Image (tube, rainbow over all chains, first blue to last red; front, side):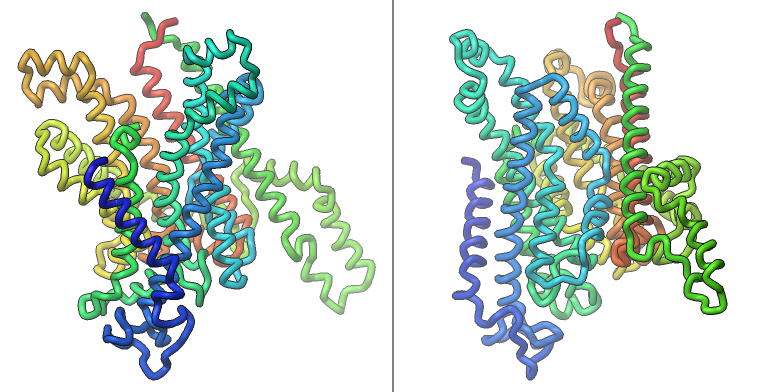
Length: 268
Length: 294
């Protein structure tokens, strides 16, 4: 394994572990206000200081990480499953069904992603509870982010379908569903894994963008996107560099997921 | 070998059909959202206490055509195809007027940012491919990776706070993605057999790039130009909203925050048509440039 991939695994697994144990590690709840100490600087009690409402930044960073690091992979899993299902059906069945599915994929891909995202988000209620907003945001990402992956899976299945070992299997009397289950789907694993890994950073960034624009995760629930909204007051940043912590963490995680992809996958 | 014009025509026809279907589907979605939005078909004049029941019935009759769903769809799509998209709920102005007004600002930003980004990307990617220096490669990868890992809204925030403007923000959003794709395309061309043979014969890097690498990479680069237009339109939303530039990106987000669905769907449809036309143009250029056996 290459060194950068080892570092990436270490960073991601370390952050996931810490964020998943937020309840144990964080000194306070993400919504707890220390009203006597708003905008406090880093100290022994508040490792990254407090925000305007007196909430501990370090705790919010950990809880926010839990939201982003748990739900972005969940959304990526959803989109990869959708892509795997539709891509495999289209690639393996061929004919009119394949044309319809791939036509839908083409249609989906010609819609500009961010415009589509905010359009669909706007059709759903905006004034909802924080938990609903976080579910809606990541479910949307999962349901709208499958098209590009479906095309890759389709190409993979088409290539496998015409390969020698599949032809041999079919010539030996292997049934269609068995060929699919035993020979095609297991060979799709590297493609699906790559698509899963590509989707996670894309969804983390999309959530951050959506939330920064007011269409994502609602307060007081933190996500890395909502923590970045605090940077809107850009002037004080040089005096308070610790406020950049969510951005640094987000960039680190996105880089980590990108580094996990092998060079060949990036080239593809 | 000769260019098959029939094949090009067939592909253009397919594209035109797909474009028509997109407009039709967008029109139907938009019409559905308008038709089922709260308050549809209610005229404020019905609340006027001075009007008698006969007058109110006459007003209701004037809206009766809209109550038939099929007639409403047909009328809506007819208007859409004529460039009349209805009225925005948020701005209380015709959508076509808003589009005309705002698109000028966005097009100006794009006209500045896209060429600038492409000049930067092509220079950096060509240099990186030609020089083949490990340190330069690592440096460019770190810069591109860092920018790619930064949310577009964050880059826009930096540009707005430091007074850099929408153009710079768009360039910074576009460059890393385009650089990575362009670099990969050039790298793949560089590894082709005929290029390796030319290298083995001692042809210098500039000639190699000019005569062997770039010509084989051109069709893919043209395709990437079309993709960059789509990326740029997507980036307009956070950039224009945060930098307070009254273009279509800001309009889209204002429409989303105000749940002005007809405006939002119309905007999405218009941007889709523009990006679709860009892709079609790129395909057509590629078809003409790449000979296909008849």
